[in-house]
Length: 433
Image (cartoon, rainbow, N blue to C red):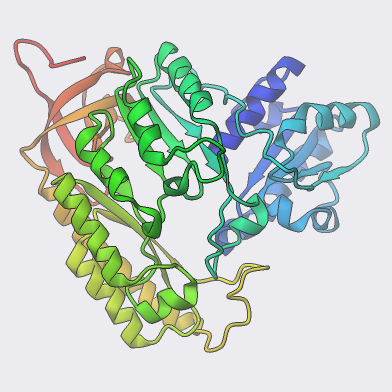
């Protein structure tokens, strides 16, 4: 969602004459879009701002702004720690960015705006498309009503708000008309889409409607909450052809006791049932997840239950983190905190297990013919191209830039821990569409 917000900022400032640049040294305005979900991300902000301070010393016209969740949380505290910052704006203030930047240009003063509105007015602003983009994000909702004990999002993004279905559909149709072939639908909890709208609708209906948009080959979405994963949405994986066979479904822990303390609203057994239903509806679906280790009160037995759940489900990939306190959440000050050394060791063990499972899943793809949407040149610096399978695996293969934006058939020949290698299948010429 932060990427999407940054693209919206670029689109909003374009009419004021601003253009994006990859070189901060050429910039007259630098905007740092922040995240506060993990402590590590928060720690990086000041070191990044420190590098920009040097640029400002050499360019008195340079203005530096900070937006996103940390800006919402810390407000004018940024000025005390980084006095060279000119603008701090919160998650509900993005639509006012041209106005605030214009005021900076006129007054050369400081601005801080972190107030909430009754609705998120930037929610429907189209993002600036990157040149040659094959896929992009579409925000369908913002905020969250779940209040998981460790999560700061409801406090910084506000309560849940969904965009009207026709408005989203028009944006997807526009993107298809501009050559976008894949959309990723964004929200803090996309599964609860529609609950705040006056008209009766749900996420499954939205998926079905987007599935009928001509030219839009692929639909993805993130992130899902297990407790709101409905039977109607599960059925979409077998009934909507353009919905990719991949779901990110954060479990966070395999221990019921820890899940209760986290206020997740489901049990480990209920999670297993949802996974089984997904695999019945869509055999071969790729399932990725999130896990937090070292949540307050997590004992060795709880951690072992998480490992057991992982061995049983065998996730295709996993994002895992040590628990860190976030200001304003219910978990702050909970009894029985886990010491850092135990958290580090549990994270090491968990990640080692997941590496085995990921490589196992990737090796199962060898010799398989996969549909790959070509995104561009590979990052490995060779003459390879890269793209993703419908199951969201990265594939590198020999090819040319003329394939960008096309869906091709690739035979997987080798598997690595984080990617696959393939060869374009020839059938009297490449199978391309």
